[in-house]
Image (cartoon, rainbow, N blue to C red):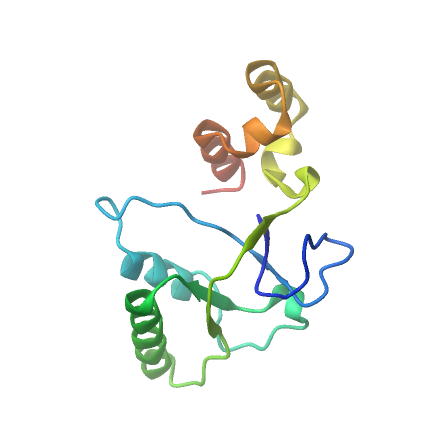
Length: 144
């Protein structure tokens, strides 16, 4: 969890300025393609509803021309399926700012017993944030 898309340096939750809340996904293209990730993105929210603020807008960041083309192509296909205009912005990636610790692993942080266990293993929240095990447990606790 973090912030991206704006021009200000080191945004925070209380001072996002022109950034949006964002997820940064590190993935192995041998296991899942960028196109498949885009399919999940389109399926897991309604991209036709305008955001109530820039903070919560629907946005795809691309890293190169190939990703840009795939994002645009899949968006156009989704518009045809939904028969509605998509309001998602597709913009070049510039920089990602990690959100504050209290915004990380939300579901895991709600479980004191599990957090105690993870803290005894990782000794610092930044290590928990980067832990694949913590990500999986957080997802499970969130119903995924």
